[in-house]
Length: 90
Image 1 (spheres, one colour):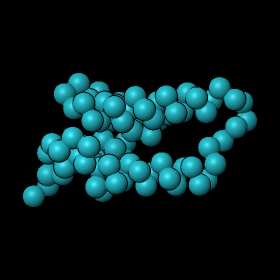
Image 2 (cartoon, one colour):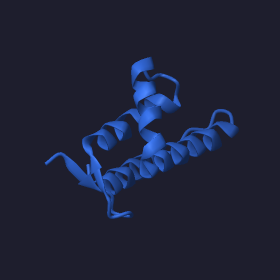
Image 3 (cartoon, rainbow, N blue to C red):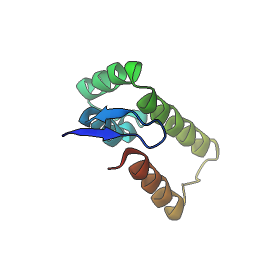
């Protein structure tokens, strides 16, 4: 119990991956507490799926910030989080 599977990789993932997926937005926005940031950075060094999640969301945030005053549409925001939940089976 406490183990999860990534649909795209077929590998087991512990509850730490689920926690990382909940912290990633705070990390990307620079709002994560230092101990959370450190735990996330250590985890993504050994977890390709979580590293990919962090990179992908960082690129999305960077892309959205190119256009000043532009926000992610609410529907896109909901679809993104639903895709994350499905990928991590949260």
